[in-house]
Length: 336
Image (cartoon, rainbow, N blue to C red; front, side, top):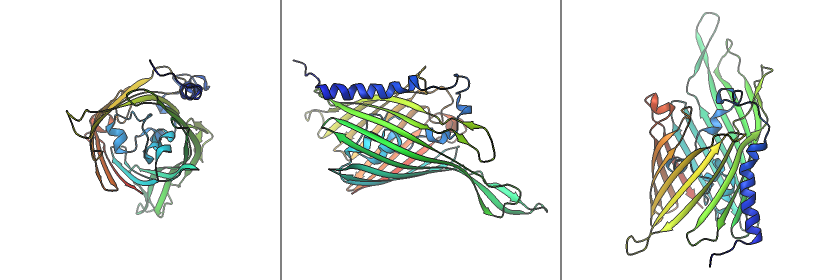
């Protein structure tokens, strides 16, 4: 006899689907006007965390670590005590450094504070009236994030992130020829997850990210929308019988992602083989329109040494790979 979903579980599953469908009814400009070239703070779309990249960015149903801050905020609700992670990536776009610290309470839920700095690396020289270089402009994108999530019963999780987003031109030295500027806005992410009562553990997840105020440059009257995205996905976990492999597990995940309103969602798929929850091999594929920084196949590995988790991933196509610099991702996480 097939298990029936309880009323609360059916409600939670419906809520996740509703979260994904919010993007259909959010008023936006026409498709041509909403092209990526017209959107601000596109660095918010760059993937963070080597594990997520190795899984083909199909992370809507993933949970158990602070990585969820960058994908689905509901994913941090199952963090047991807390963790701290540093994520590094290098691509033709620039160098990204992201830090996340989570703290968990069985009564209050899980909270996280995070920061992401994208350094474009193209320092702009500042010169005086005689043409002497007296300083340099440092272009950077910054996102400061506060996240809260908690479990609702045994199977349901919900999360919310608030982001302060900045586009900065900072000065090092004297910058008489190039004025420094700073533009700021804010955004929120909403997410939910639900575990289905199936024989093989299956989790559904959905999130809508970067919903916020349009970004306007301090010296301009024009403003651009943030890159809002709706993503929904599922994952299944299968423990391999001991007669074939001892303490081995396989996880498969698949997501769909699109702009708002939803018109042409693109899939993302990934798989992970775990041995004794200490060594991990990952592979995935990101379907893209050709404008993605990190589309195409991905590979990743991970290791656990006591409380230290090390993840590494590589992307083999996209803008950086086409420019001869395939993106690399490294994450270091310490569990408390």
